[in-house]
Amino acid sequence: MSIHASPNRTLRIAAIVTLVFALLPGICFAQSGKGARAAPAVVQGMQKVVTDKASFVLYVPKGWKVSEGSEGTARYVTASDPSGRSSVFLSTGVVSRGENATALAKNANAGLGRQARDLEIRNAFASRDGSSLVYDGTYSPPKRGRTEFRTWVSRQGNDFTLTRIEAPAGQFEAMKPALLTVLSNIRVTKGSFSTQAAAAPVKVQLVPYRQRDGSASFLIPQGWQCQDHGKGLFTAGDPAGYSFISGNVTLVSPQMRVNTPGILVSPYLNSHQAWQFITAGYGLASNMRFEKVIPRTDLTGQLGQAGVPASIEEYLYTFTNREGRACKGFTFGMSFGSRSGLNWSFRHLTVTAPADRFNAWAETLGAMMGSYKINERWAQAYVAQGQQRLRQMQQQTSAMAARNAQEIRQTMQAAYDERQKSQDYIDYQRTGYIRGQQDWISTMEGGAVYRTDSWGTKNTATGEYREGKAYDYYHYQGKNPKYSEQMQAVDSRALWERHIR
Image (tube, rainbow, N blue to C red; front, side):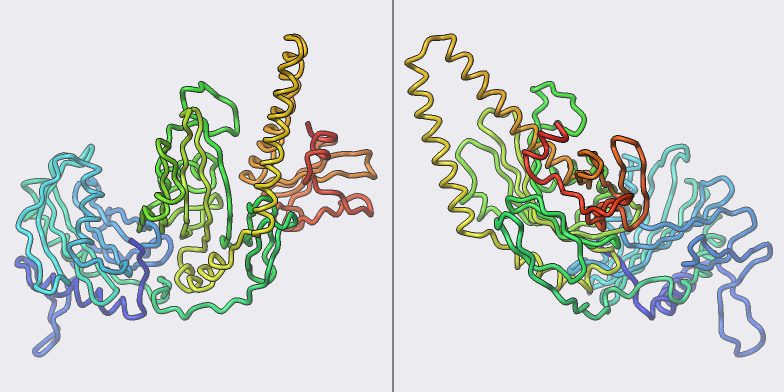
């Protein structure tokens, strides 16, 4: 679930935990005279703690440990006693559309269930409108033994708060006053949460981009860098975590027994599973959590082939990119198997943005995806070229039938070698696109090869490396850092065979 905060979150959380505090027995309130308003007591020995990222302020007994964290774009805080067996947990944010308190509780319990298989929920009470829920339970997390807990879930509009107190079985009632005292004194610091849910849509000027081979055209924001890979494939974006990508990946099945760096090996996977596997395999994304997966069975029937597995899906998800930034993405992905079962392919169209900016950018990202168009003339020419090559191959095969066996073997070997070279060049293009690399040829230096990556540019002959924004994969334009020369990008097979192979 996607979670963010609203400006009135601190007041709302304080009201909820105070209500919880007041409804349960065994809690003392401090009073400063007649008519004074009841407030949660801060018992002796309590100390004030500000979490690492200053999102929460709370009071805990001396010796207790406090940690702040996030899940996707959610913020939560945990306070535990020195033994680590009794604790207080609070999580807060904005929920995805359609999630009520029960759905939020199920998501939270799924996390507890992954820690212990003996999770048991009992004494659950929900409000009639589904906006609040309270329940008790037990589970046995690793190294802690049997544990009792009580959880409160509340949703108001798009905002939610989930709190939980827990203690060793048999000690819960004795620990409850101290746990609720800690819970009632948790405060969210002003400005610590973004207000994505209420953020106004970002208006971004989009400009047209046409690929060099004329295969596709689309719109991207002014100033974005675009790496053109031809045949409708590209990577566009900026270093802040925004991107628009059209990609294609070929994977090998395990029965091929291939173990080559850069080649992914996996059984056939459905579209969203394939995307998670591929991005993790190439180190592009981690902690991927899907919010929505929408099967496009209408398209699968049109594009799939009888007897060949196919999966076409749309999915919304959160993830951590390779720079450690929390991001959110939307992908239209297609997985297609093969009749041989020896390999399979994945094609996708993807947009991403920083997690706390995705909603504000949603309109712009949608316009970018909707602008992507394959050039019909190019597609027709591509098909025509394929048909011509097929006819040529048929003619060559007929001619070869009249030759002797030695000539046939020589011709077939040459054809195999040519196909291998072509496949090697395709693999070079694909791996360069996935890894964020581009090669450049220096005429001034006798054909020396410069290679850019996500951090800088390296002269592969001398080992000289220049790091920084001007030299990384997104910004480098081919200007020789030592001489007055515009280097040539390796964007053709002829250049690749002459300088790289």
